[in-house]
Image (cartoon, rainbow, N blue to C red; front, side, top):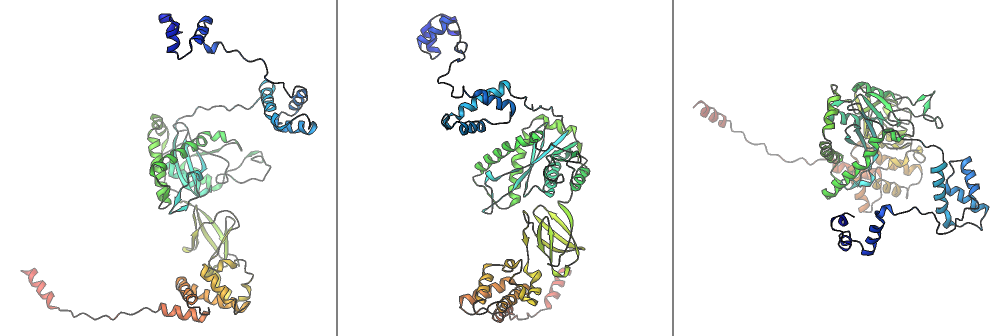
Length: 490
């Protein structure tokens, strides 16, 4: 049309528009654009198979609007199996969708919110399985604790192993110390890291109120001077800024990993440093809104919180303590004593007074156990009859070599006698060095000798005796000192 106003030549105008001459003539004659000549289709290409029974379907929808088209179709197929086939489901779905839009119930509207600078921070956890990160060649299963400032979309992420309170504390304070400022509010979802777990069926309320905050989470909020708030139960959109940022964050990390050419890192700290560097680059491009956020927030004027949750556990008669539904063994001399436990995100430390009694990796999940044979071996040697049905019997084989030794001992000895012979070897490993005992067992296997506690003890003793070097005492010439003093005086 524009070309026709310039010169009025139909052929030239059609060529400019990359259009056939006859098509161009049709639009010029009508004086309308192609989009203006389209008319809505008011005919069907095939008969409607549901026209006869649509009133029944509509009546059911009016009575129960939550019914899905697939459910209604299955009901029709059961009532009239000779009338309907699977290929007609899509037709019914389109009709039901059109009915909902024209006559269905009102739907909930998401109300967009206007964010204010420095008002709040949102925190959430996200999985990272799709990134395929490995640590020293081993798959690294972990999460990211992500904090976002909704006004500027400033973002920070911390590598975590779980959605625990310790992980949330570490993630929040790493972000705050990176900012150097503190917002007025901190918002998270109703995870058990921040709120108490409630019974099923309570709809997220306790005594008519929201789920109450954990004491540890409230203590963290008081320390940093932030007001805690949570989303409604099941309302993820209320934490929408941080939720929406997960996909963009992982896409950014994926691209950075592709450029790096490797997804393997030396350790967890190296992976965290890589994530930090990518977020620094992203945050530098957030523009002046980050400056507005920083100006609106108050300075961070408190120190770091310890990155652990403190708990107390009493040592049971099994010489174990239970922490977060998992069992850990401790020295048997502590049975009946209360231990002070520092629960980190990735490890636990147990203290009796100021003495560290246990430090080990933290177990994930529930009903797990980590039993050190050194803590219970003396009781097993005294009561070998209890070994056969000992609850933690499999933990008494520190390696495959020890398991092979036990099986070899049970060949000539059966029952308690064989158990006692193996327990004496295990006791030797606990009182000397496990690696020396294991080396002695390997040597006996290589030489096809019978496995006995006395023979293992002999080999360990021979290996443990250090060779004393023959040293020759040097002759000291004291005249050298006189010569040195003479030169200094000169």
